[in-house]
Length: 172
Image (cartoon, rainbow, N blue to C red; front, side, top):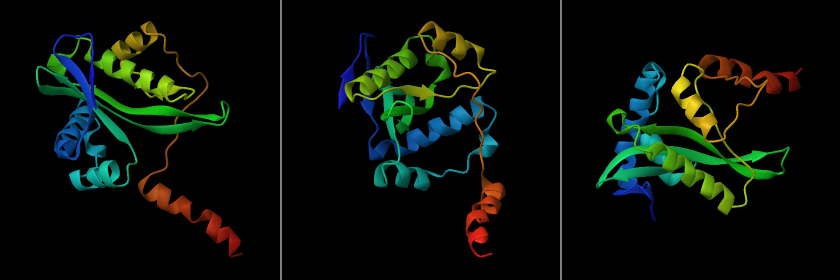
């Protein structure tokens, strides 16, 4: 499926299996931009399994003059307060030399359209607090910060250590 936009020579399409190496490259490029490349443990093989076998997430690509210039990865979420699904944007990345052309806004708008089309209740995403230009842009477009919420995460050894708590409590 290809979606034309109002930006000349730019369109959005869903990623296909053959795009997996490019999506993996964009993930690494985004991590490098965020100074978090050391946290990327994903491999092309894991990504392929997640996207094209398990369908854990979806990816759209922004294509300008025949070449991909960015991507957005997202998955279905659920709001207990709304009682309906939503979309959660995991990553939105546009190549540095292509920024400022409206490509990121077009991809985010595409996801907003998809959210509305499916009758979902919200489109959400995270942004680093140091990324002031993105925050200003998102607020200009009508997005608002969720106050009083902090993201917590268990991973690696902390996740493994904590994962046995329930089972161990049953054995007592």
